Image (cartoon, rainbow, N blue to C red; front, side, top):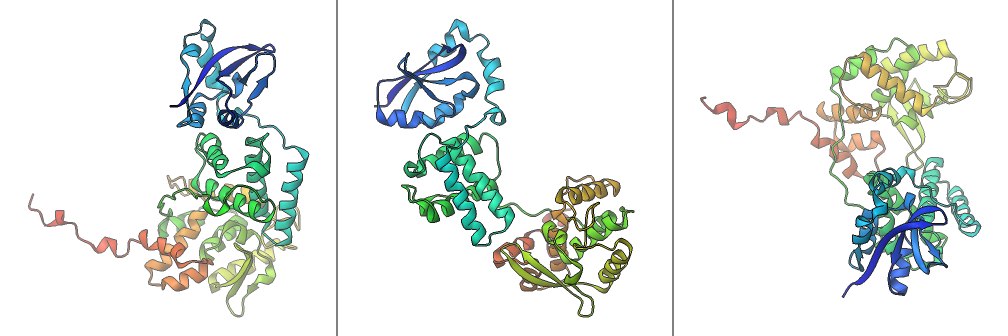
Length: 383
């Protein structure tokens, strides 16, 4: 038989709170400790959650299969007339402020960061993993990292990631960050091998037609902007790869562009056309960058990722294309157009720098070269 938790509302220390009444039970107390903002009242001898942190859906999900949550008193209380208007604003996920990490746990996350730097993970990966780890550890405080289990990971996903409608890749990065942390820094009851990844959607990459790409590039009157977008499409580059290019990476005699420290800390070379080399040479003569091919207003300062995305967005609008396109669509389009022109999938894999051929194979699902040859049975109907 399920245990019972009676939920009531009231005022405690001058602020509205939600009380949780139940018979003393170690298991239930451990689950209550997972609720954001929960506190123990020594005077009332019961647990409570400040109204600003209270999330009814999260409460039900937390105790599902563990205890029966009785909300009848809180819903019929005379003091709860403004309850829904208050909590509707309070439970917005972005409004919840999580407590800072205690010094010991923060030091462990710093140790994790230094280990990743020692292993030469990319700065972007380090920042992403450390930020996600700290967010998770804040959410489950005051539990110690030595006492965390897989249930706490599930709780974080249900209580933080899902309510915010965060992406599959966000959850997947969390799993990566936790597995690495608990494998190399902390020995805990978390079974790192059994932390499950989210079931990924079979999402097809977005692709622009050759005419649309051409219109976007032509729409840019600023030669610097036009050159940036052109090299991303003509060489199938990621945004960071384009912005990390240096003049020395161009081998105009061999028609080769060297991409250094790409995703996975891998270098690769891609062919670069005479047309693109001519455009780059003209650009270099005009702008004379010091360090990076594409620099910001200050010499020697790399062009920002946000700015190049805005350049692309502006170009799409100028071209009259009514699509919510992002800069990465140029890379998708490059791969798809190569495939449609007959380039072998294995070569495309090398050009894109994909570790697995399965990643490249997704472009076979968006290439319409063969699909448009298929005749629908409708064509033969005499109607």
